[in-house]
Length: 229
Ligand SMILES: NC(=O)c1ccc[n+]([C@@H]2O[C@H](COP(=O)([O-])OP(=O)(O)OC[C@H]3O[C@@H](n4cnc5c(N)ncnc54)[C@H](OP(=O)(O)O)[C@@H]3O)[C@@H](O)[C@H]2O)c1
Image (cartoon, rainbow, N blue to C red; front, side, top):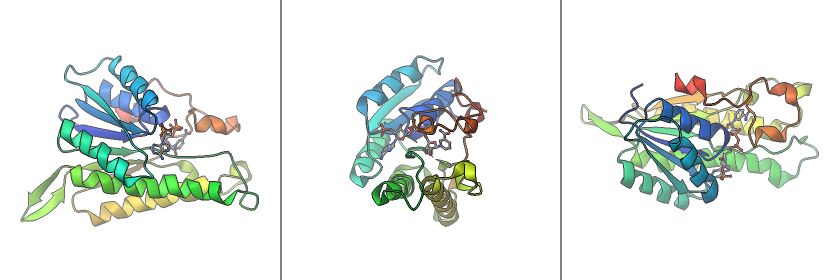
């Protein structure tokens, strides 16, 4: 993929996998990377971290504070990125939520449901806010998207509900629902490329909540090589 003229936006780009994906794009020669999240101090620190790595001379890393639950804040953030970078090429829908494991019968209802709010509704909001600012072209008098959406999915959404994964129902339901939504989006928007990416088990703020260390066969990579390639 030619990245030198690509405008890339990553939600949840201030921490964990999102920050490493941003770093991977920078190492691969991207010129414009926007990172979104709710905490400005975290985004600022990630911006410095990414710019400290070897990168293309023209690289710009911008950040915008946005909550994926709040469509207005997303619209402001994408507007800001569009003003700065022009039409947007790649969205990495990475922001997500996973709380401590809880059984369906013992779970606090609001906490269980919050997984769907962040991982499904948040991803829904993010893709809808991104599309009006994304690159498209006219083909035979019809508008065709030239954008790509990478949704950071999870293997947990696809694995059987074995004893080892007990308590992960809210997360599993939300991640498989979001993956299906992205698949449908790709079928509904001509030209749009969509990919659901399962990153593997990665130690992060979210990942570390789960003490079942057998899950973590990877340490956090210096960058995400599967993204870099
Ligand atoms: N770690 C793993 O093993 C693993 C495995 C499979 C899939 N994943 C997926 O990978 C993605 C990243 O997770 P991670 O492991 O890197 O954990 P993480 O470091 O906790 O990342 C979550 C990111 O999402 C952002 N976020 C959460 N709620 C948000 C909201 N309402 N609006 C905007 N941003 C929000 C957070 O930033 P703020 O708090 O500053 O908003 C944070 O940067 C998630 O989608 C997760 O489901 C992780």
